[in-house]
Amino acid sequence: MRISHVCALSAALLLAGSCSRETPPAPTPAAPAATTATPTAPPPAAPAAPARDAVFGREQLDQMLAPIALYSDPLLAQVLMAATYPGDVAEAAAWSKSHPDAKGDQAVKEVASQPWDPSVQSLVAFPQALATLGQDPAWVQRLGDAFLAQPEDVMDAVQRLRHQAQAAGHLESNEYQNVTVQPSAQPSVEPAMGGTTVVEQGGGASTIIIEPASPEVVYVPSYDSTQVYGTWAYPSYPPAYYPPPPGYYMGGALATGLAFGVGVAVADSLWGDFDWGGDDIDIDVDRYNNINVNNQLNASSNRWQHNSVNRDGVPYRDRASREQYSRRLDGASSREAFRGEDPQRARSREQARASMQQRGFDAPARSNLEARDRARDADRAQARDRARDTQQRTQARDRTRDTQDRTQARDRARDTQQRAQARDRSTQQGDRQQQARDRSGSSRTAADRSGQQRQRQQQQRSQSNSQARQSARQHQSGGGSRTRNNAFEGARSPSSSRAQQDRGRASHAQSRSSSSRSSGKPVNRQSHAPQRGSRRG
Image 1 (cartoon, rainbow, N blue to C red):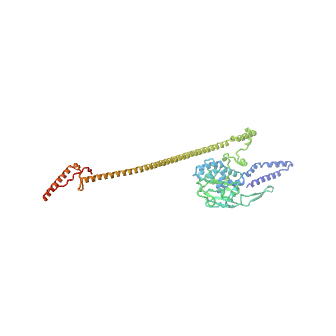
Image 2: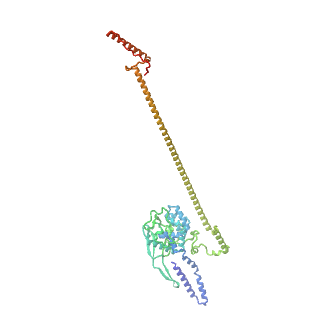
Image 3: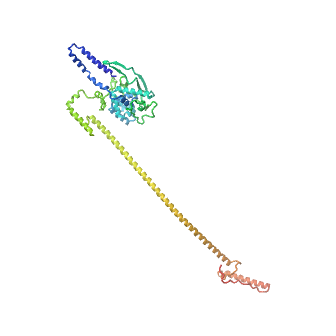
């Protein structure tokens, strides 16, 4: 879409030539002076030529745009505008992470006092998008540099990727987005100077437009770039995939290959949109002024312009952008002589810098901005070192605690094993003692049994002796069965002996009287006198 510049330049040259021919007749040598004077007018337009130089190749553009090419047009426009301020995007991503509940227009109003570009402030309404951009600041800077240097190529790459996703069956309308295809006009062919043909065409035969299904609710998609575009055409430049943090996208991916998070209700946060035919971004001034009360725009400022003031000193990648957005005033180069600048001294200084870098020393900063950046980087490095040291101390503490726990566990296991072994030894010793006691008890039992047997035998003998003596006594003392008298029997019981004698005398007298009465003859009875030598029973 840069044919208008070529045509204007051609028209200016032709007009200058015609004017030189309409001047009054002059000598032939004077004509070259006129022709040499007219070409001096267009040199200011010469620096615009490097802007069309390819800073990034086609494969690089597709690689860096793959993670966001399927965003809706208004959101993608805001992302590309904000990417030209990579420092602000990093700070906005950190702010959004520390305020997880902030989203929508209210979040944009909360950061109105921040020194960020309005395009960056508008992204605070979409924490899902900022979470993706905050994962790789270098990618964001390259994306912004590409959009500044090659806006037409960037928009062509977006259309090229969308056509690939649609051909792979992963881009279609649903309840979250509307996908429309607008046929593009036939490429315009215009003749240029010298018979050269200039062909103007977009990124494909048609233009794919993605818009939110509801203008008031925007859904930020998440997808794997290695899957949604089908077979990738550049194996050496694979697309990056930035997975969203947990909690932003609930559930799995849809059948279309895209996952949509919770919708964000917005009214004025999205104020930019693509002009696919003009290869630039249009601004809805009313929405912009409603949300950016501290930075109003005129009604005629309906096209986005990069503001180098909000770049915050981040260097531009290409020479054309540096020349276009340089903040140096006219005539600043002419004041170098008054500052004592010496090219030889500058070369010596650069050589000293290079020598210091080769030896491992940091070269001094060239400006206050570079010194501030270095100080910021040093603070971040110190913060990372402190965090790493804290993590290492925590890990060392955990390892020490684990070692102590394992040592204590081993000690407890050893003590338990020793106690078990001691119990086993004690049990074995008790068993041996019990066996010894059992053996001694068995011997004692045998002895006791033999002693009891002897005792029973003695008792039996004593009982038999007692019975013998008793029977002897009974035999001696009682009954008519006793044949012999004991001479000492009367000594034991004199009364019974006298009674017996009395009964004997009475019986003798009675028998004598009865026999004398019956026969008249005396009766003589043989007396039983005890025999000598008789033993006591």
